[in-house]
Length: 115
Ligand code: FES
Image 1 (cartoon, rainbow, N blue to C red):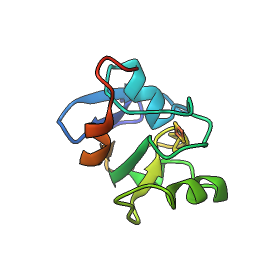
Image 2: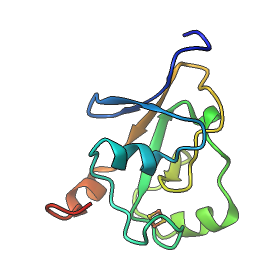
Image 3: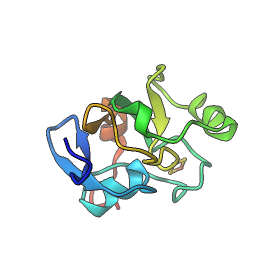
Image 4: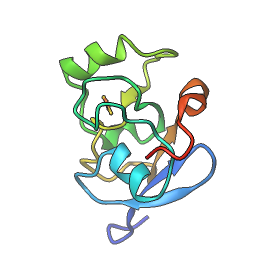
């Protein structure tokens, strides 16, 4: 990867999309039709946008106390858990891309036709 290459966000289903500095994981998901729930509209007031960061966490903004409080309410939380609306791309990932997995229970809750 050279400095001119786009930053990439790779979802666990294999789809990969470019991201700009400042984009949240939710921004990238919504821009490309990836079903990631976001009940509160991205204002850190729910935990429905919970994702697991499998690679490139070094390139994301650090979690705030508010985000950690919301994650306490989420299921299947681990050390790699983030809220998709709060984790923003702030640097180029060392490995070239940011790997994101949407927990299975979260996928199952996605409303048919919801955005
Ligand atoms: S959409 Fe509600 S906290 Fe992210």
